[in-house]
Amino acid sequence: MTALAIAGLALITVLARGFFMIPEREIPMPDWAKQGLRYAPLAALAAVVLPQIVMTPDGQLLHTWQDARLYAAAVGTAYFFWKRGILGTILSGTAVMLALRIGLGW
Image (cartoon, rainbow, N blue to C red; front, top):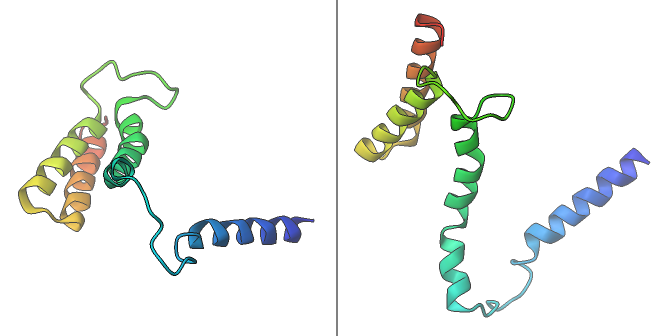
């Protein structure tokens, strides 16, 4: 039963992801939809990352500025806008987070 469920989910995934590659011609789409799809990845990223930065593990908003995640996100964002490099963004944010967590115990 488990193997059948995995095979079914794999088939559904392949069909869903390949749906746009199956047609030989481009599917007509209204301009408003094309414009909206340009911002979909950014909106999805913000929806996933932002709650991890501003909320505690029990689902409450942060009530203190002494949280390493806030400063790591700020430094990572600043680095990205300065250099436009993904690896440097990850490394600078991680370095700040580790320094504050290990050094100050935040």
